[in-house]
Structure formats: C-alpha cells, structure tokens
Image (cartoon, rainbow, N blue to C red; front, side, top):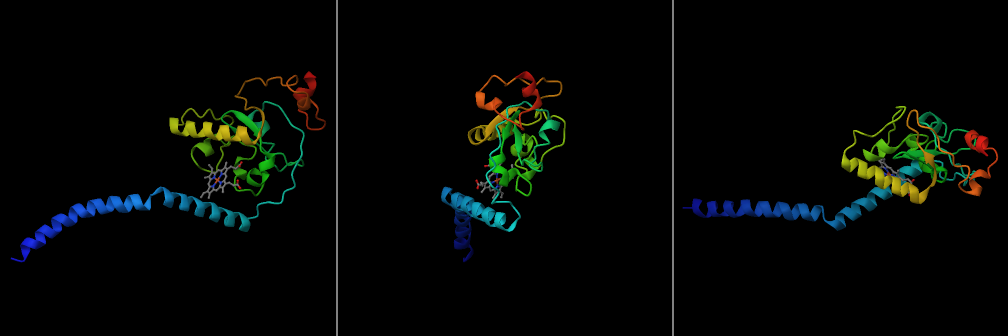
Length: 198
Ligand code: HEM
C-alpha cells in the first residue's frame, strides 16, 4: 500500500533531478558568475605579480625604432638580457618591439619565455612556452588555434611597433631604408643591413 505513492515520488524525482541539474549548471556558468571568475583571476594574477620578482618599475626605455626582417636566431638576441634591454617577440610571422611591455616579456616577467622568440605556438595553445626550432611554420595547428594566433597578432599590432617579418630559412630580408625618415634616423641601433643600403 505504501509503495504506490513512493513510486510516484521517485518518477517525479528523476525528471526534477534532470531539470534541476540544468538549472544548477546554467546558474553556475551564468554570465555573471563567469565575469566574477574572470575578475578573481585578474585579482589573483595581480597578487601573484606582486610576490614574484617582476621588474614592475623598469624605467621607460626610449630606444630608437628598428625596422628589420630577422631570422629566428637573430631574433633570439632580443630577449631583454642585452645592455639596451630591447625585447622583441614574433607572432604569426611578424616581429614586434615589445620593449614597453618589458615587465611581461623581459627577464623575470611572467611571459619571459616569449622574449626574443616566436610566441605563435605558445599563444595558440595557451601555454607560456616557446620552441627552439629554427623556424616553426605552424602548419599543424588547427583552425581554432590559427584564429587565436591571428587575434593575438591583431592585439600586438595595436599595442606594439612592428619591426619586420620573421624570415623563413632561405628567405631574404626586405629593404626598409626608404620607408619613413625616422626609421633611418638611428645611431647605434641601426641594423647593419639598413646602413649598408643608405
Ligand atoms: C590563470 C592564468 C592567467 C592569468 C590570471 C593571466 C592574467 C593576465 C593579465 C591580468 C594580463 C594583463 C596584464 C596587464 O595588462 O596589466 C595578461 C596579459 C597577457 N597574458 Fe595572461 N594570464 C594567464 C595566463 C596566460 C597564458 C597561459 C598565456 C599564454 C598563452 C598568457 C598570455 C598573455 C599575454 C601575451 C598577455 C599580454 C601582455 C601584453 O599586454 O603584451 N596569459 N594576462
């Protein structure tokens, strides 16, 4: 006798359980919660940065602008450890001068692994690592990863000065000497190739 209402109850329970799980899921992953989580992440990152030895007070470095195509091994020299402290990073075949973002990419920064390197693969796969390959053609990345690389490239274009192309093996550097006057108006940091062509 008592088993009849019990059966009814458990039927109702299972359909309720399904909908309450969906309710629970959509509540947990609601836009508000996702925004709050993002804010917490940023906050934790700020705390993390304070307790790691990031050179936050690096003086603004006013270095002469450079315009030059480089090979992967030439790019490697610009990891911020050289006397002028210049930092270059390549994304999707383009090299950017990220010296103003030295606290990120310079020695001791959270993204120092990208300094003087091709960061494309790391950015695409959300991993702060860089390869020591001579040239990475990224041909094995899927379309989502490639879209992500392109988005990063667009962000770097907005924020940083463009230096030139990352040269594939055997590719010749372009001549930028007749582009803009200020780009050739450099003293010590003018690349040898540009000086030869002036
Ligand atoms: C929990 C993990 C992470 C947190 C909390 C975090 C947090 C942040 C924050 C707060 C900024 C902006 C800093 C500012 O403008 O003051 C930033 C920038 C950046 N993050 Fe992350 N990040 C994380 C993981 C990663 C990973 C895995 C990568 C590598 C793919 C990455 C790459 C970058 C890059 C390239 C920038 C731009 C720096 C610039 O403006 O040049 N981040 N991150």
